[in-house]
Image 1 (cartoon, rainbow, N blue to C red):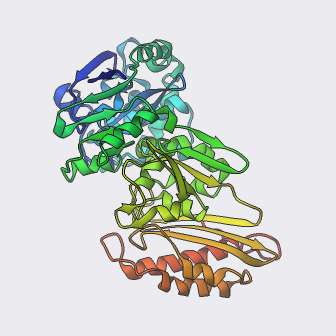
Image 2: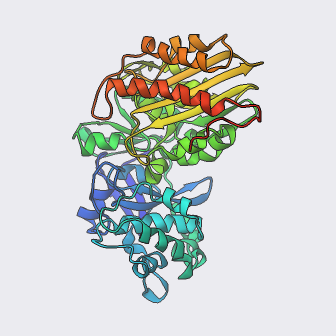
Image 3: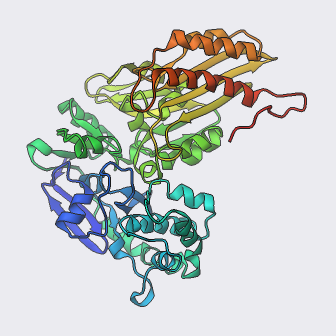
Length: 487
């Protein structure tokens, strides 16, 4: 199999080839330090503030699709074959301001200006997808952008007005889409790419079989998909992670299959790519999905990565465990599947043999009588890490609870089911007393820790109250309407 050491991409309108590129070189450092494209700012260096937002175009199934990402935690080597668009590339007709920039000027959407390029890029991506967005759509697009002086009202007014200045049909990325697609297609490389020095090595496998071979040869390699967590290992903790095996480009890990029986998601599918299927198969996860980080992180982060990382406060494991999800692990020798709850052994320890990687996640669709809910408690509503996350799935038949799956994150060293609380519910009539007993039984299931996000006492009370909330939201009075509606 041919190997290459070149990473190739488009930067605005320029074709770039970089040889021996270190694995941990971030896109932000490359743009600012090497290319002097200083419109892209460094604010937090952890994907939280959005000042470094750029657009990344990637070919998927022959189509060129653009999305916002955080340049501060995105590794440049992962962008092989992509189109990187920075704020410097924006331009309106005859060299005038781009419509998004003009709207920001007219509606006073900028004050100190530090965060402005990031806001402009997020609004640009939104405008191309949704030229006439609602305020809710704007707020969702701006979840990952923080402003400390202007306030968000004028920025939202600017977003509502962009289409008054021009339409996406006249934008460069729309007009030149065919040409850009052809240029990126011509840059495709067959075979594995290995680049960078030995102590900062990047490996891009050619395909899924090659990934198995790479991990067989480098069992302690760091697998990186969206880098929304691993990026911080580098920018905040200065942790060596070589060799790094990038998998974002592997189309075989990008499948989303929805049948009458289950939703099966490849480990390389991002939160954004999975959202439509998740909402269709599991409507209760729609509002929950919007609470996962911000738009940029949802465009980068993968469900497989969130699971493989094994964090006790990951957003997806509790709700997927409650739904009875299975994870499929693969290596050069073959595949094996196990219940997602069994994948997590202890803090920082998962059931992965040498050379294993997460290949896919299968989530059974709800059965008749199944009632599902997902909850996230955090200090901020948007773009924040959970203090407590919970997924509940109960089956109720003729007024009696026949099955219960209650899973929590943030309550133990791993995402974990609440066995005692489940036992308190199964076989009981659907009533308040049963849920009170289950809430009390949680103290047998968990001994949560105190940290800067929440105290142990707070976490336990929240977990108990979420069970009470679940009962109140789904208990029906004689009119068939819930007694309590919670936003």
